[in-house]
Amino acid sequence: MRWKSLFVAAFIAAIALSPICAQAQTNFKQLPVTVEAYVKPFPPLRIVGNLYYVGTYDLAVYLITTSAGNILINTGINNSVPMIRSNIETLGFKFSDIKLLLATHGHWDHVAGMAEIKRLTGARMLMHEDDAAMLEDGGNSDYRYPQGRGAVYEPVKVDQRLKEGDKVRLGSTELTVLHHPGHTKGATSFMFTTQDAGRTYRVLIVNMGSINPGVNVSGMPGYPNITEAYAQTFAKQKELKPEIWVSSHAGHFGLHEKYKPGDAYDPKRFIDPEGYRAKIERYEKLYRDQLQRERQG
Ligand code: ZN
Image (tube, rainbow, N blue to C red; front, side, top):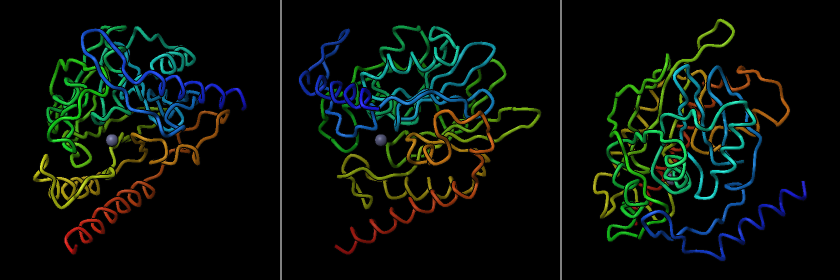
């Protein structure tokens, strides 16, 4: 729709014209949005049971509803909070019912709205211990920039540091924390079960082992054991057997192939164990190929 592209264009222009944003206590320099799908709106949907997609066209944000309040995983970029809020309310839930905040990793395109959502809801922020420092300094301590890059989003205080195997509980929902480092030091996936129409589904919200530009998987000054981290993550991810899986980016798990706005609720469209296996193997191959190229040359 034309108005949507106009909206996105205006939004990108507004960000480009105001690179320095003063927030609560800390200055941060917001990165320019170069991928339109990061800010393009997308209508919210129910994926399975108590798991909902409330993100933008490509930046996945998940709401998990429980009888004791709701869990929000990821936020999109700095300015996505009104869109996420509106998506949650469109589904009939209250933004103020968010009690726990989680993230798949500490890059700005997944956590830059956390500080604002925390302020608006009073929710607690839980983050893997190896990405907690990055959240608290607004992305400054990213391993790609051993000297620091400056804050690129509003820093958010982490209330609880998570480790491999920890359980995050709210109401009758229990998420298992899976440490999948490489993409960042504290990259995390979450496994849980949910019920729908008398059936129980094993669901994985996975952080894929993708490799950002500028990263050498044979070794980074800011991340000396990156090679083993990626290798172990792929080995661990291949052992998981989710029935339904989703990821940090809609494009990673094929949201737009599996679902079109207006489609009826049907969790079966997201049952895709073979697609999961194939995607992990694809990222592992990219890693192995890049490692070989780096070592050869
Ligand atoms: Zn990332």
